[in-house]
Amino acid sequence: MGLRSIIVLVVLVGVRGSSTSEAASTDISAQSKIKSETAEDTGQKSTLPVEVTEDNMMATGELNPNHYPAQRAAKVVQHYFNTRYGSPYRLFGLQQVHSGNAEDVSNSGRRYQLEISVHEIISNKTQKCSAEVFFPRGEGSLFAEVQASPCEELLINTKLQEEALYQQYKNNQSLLSAQNLPDSYGHIEPNMEPFWHLAIVASSFIMLKESTENTLYNMAQVASIKQLDTENDQLKFECNVLLHEMVSQEILQWKLLFTWSSAEGINVLEKEQLPHCHSCEKAPNSK
Ligand SMILES: *[C@@H]1O[C@H](CO)[C@@H](O)[C@H](O)[C@H]1NC(C)=O
Ligand SMILES: *[C@@H]1O[C@H](CO)[C@@H](O)[C@H](O)[C@H]1NC(C)=O
Image (cartoon, rainbow, N blue to C red; front, side, top):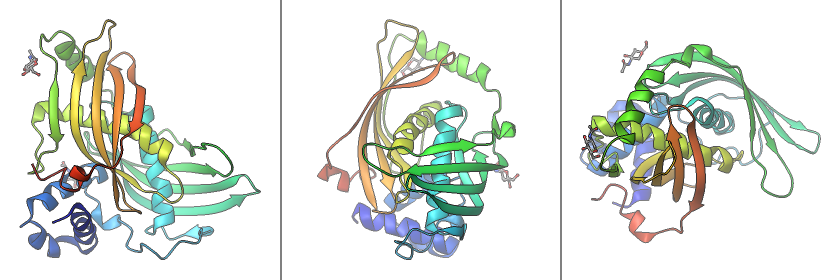
């Protein structure tokens, strides 16, 4: 079964709910895909947009909160929260879009005003927040600009856990190295979970920058993560990630170099999109 059809299956499962997941579970690839999508999407599969082609025209005015335009803009807010507040113990998902409004701003771009529920996945807390996403229009590399209410209830203090993790891996003789998070069975070793979260947060920096009005990015899998030696007091990681762009149904492979410490958080040093690899048509779940 090709990756494309697996993804279609996942979307179908998401839309139709549990009735089709029995069928899907005969395919372990599909299962692990569901796990990874679910991990990112906080299990709210039913909020996935159904219409794929309905809105090639840019919707303006009040938006259907379950349709793509509102969902795409809201997803950008999720990536924004991860880049601002994410950590190995703090990870944000979009739970629900309550309302959305889009307007053209003279000739400069389009602004979305959103009421959304953001989910902090590790503490399992949810809060309703307002956010504004502006997609600039014009030449050059333009990035979505996000403003959001702080959502303080989700900003759980995780300093102690972060410090413990930092000390453990800073002082360890051997460097961390892992592949396929999650694996073919949708499983992640508990001691690797913080690094799965860390890689999602680091990938959010890519997804935030790459997002436009016409994209919907999700983390699919960490193909590999490797801790590198450092001279300073940061932990340094090289990471290959697979991102799922749900509108084009493409799996994109990116390489990331980033540092993390409990004191300074994540700092992305390099990111590079890798060419489409045909072995990825079988990966991520065929091993
Ligand atoms: C998360 O919280 C919701 C609502 O409070 C609850 O229904 C759900 O069971 C919780 N999930 C976990 C994994 O604890
Ligand atoms: C050191 O790292 C190795 C490999 O990542 C791991 O198996 C081991 O548990 C770590 N030791 C400590 C004390 O964390």
